[in-house]
Structures are given as C-alpha cells and as structure tokens.
Length: 145
Image 1 (cartoon, rainbow, N blue to C red):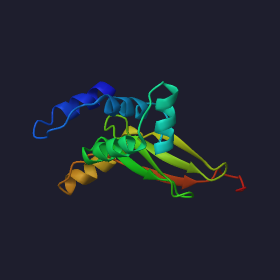
Image 2: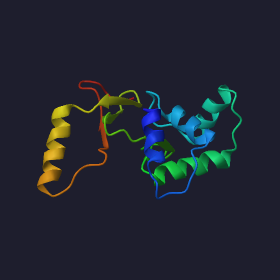
Image 3: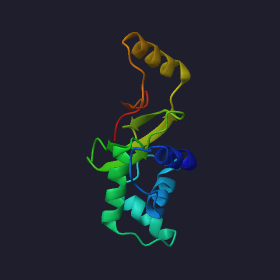
C-alpha cells in the first residue's frame, strides 16, 4: 500500500511538493497492521530503524498527509490522545473499543455493511471516500473492571 500512496501523492500535479525520505518513512511506519500511531510511536519506530528525526518534521509531515487525504486523525475516547492512521478505501475496518478489557480491536468491515452504507449514500447523491466506524462494547455476560 505504501507504493500506492506515494503514487497518489505523485499524481497530484497541481501541487508543488517533494516526496521526501521522511514522508516515505512515516507512510511506511503507518502502513502496518497496528491502528493509531501517536507522534511518539512514529518517532520511536523511526529511531529503532536508525533514523534520526526532528519532532517538528514528523508533525509537519503528518499535517501534510492529513491535508492530502492520506492520513486521518483518531482520538482515544478515554485519554483524548490523538493518533494517526492511513486511509485505505480498499481495507475498511471497524474500531471496536472493548470496555471489558479496555482494548481497541481492528475488525475488517464486512462487505454487506459497506454495501448498505454505499447504497444509502448513492440514493442521497454521494459516494464515500472513507468509512469510519467506532463501536464501544462489552463482552456479553462480562462485567466491566
């Protein structure tokens, strides 16, 4: 997916920007199965790869990727901490906030749900660019800690 995102940025001919090494490194960092990287996670990840990064460069790159529709901001319900995630229209998912153990699970969005949402939007004259679903739940029969 990283190559697809780089190609998307390169295709924006009306923009005058460079695809820098830090931008590629951050996209690669965000392109894993983990959901929601904080700025600290990104910096730590890059440092473990031997890449020294400037904090302001990470913030600037994240803001650039948000502006270009590559990254979205997520906010944790409890801590209000911001994290960042790639937008991937081909890999839509649900964030399930499991209150039973206070964990967030990333679950693939079932096609039938995507189809219902898509059909609804078409009737209203829209086409989705991204679908974000957050569900907060507890396991049946379990008491919250």
